[in-house]
Image 1 (tube, rainbow, N blue to C red):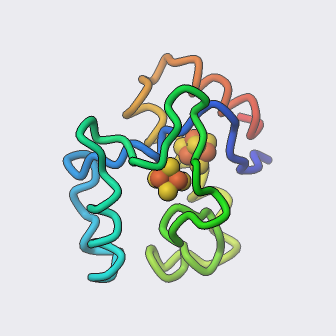
Image 2: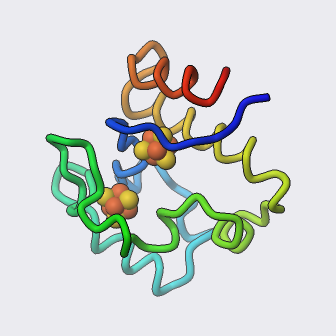
Image 3: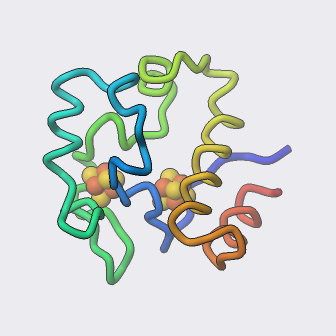
Length: 116
Ligand code: SF4
Ligand code: SF4
């Protein structure tokens, strides 16, 4: 069975361009949406994303909507804890495909890491 994990040197979910996430208002509260929008840099990447090392610079303090955790996914998407693994894998795959492409090294690395 595939098991979700975040892979290093990815960062696809730190590309925050709202044009690629048209349903933000459906799952973020008003405050979260304001925070989300405040994080978007001119190139669409989060202002806290270290593009050289592809790492979050505020990882321990990152917002709840950046966390792949049961309570945040249940609150945002209505996903039950037992559904989190498969849902998170699909979210990452979609995001990685959208940012780096469906034949990208990043997607290959993710698939290998989670066991697809
Ligand atoms: S898209 Fe998934 S694997 Fe890539 S950085 Fe985000 S959580 Fe990690
Ligand atoms: S706060 Fe960190 S994890 Fe969240 S989008 Fe920005 S760089 Fe990525």
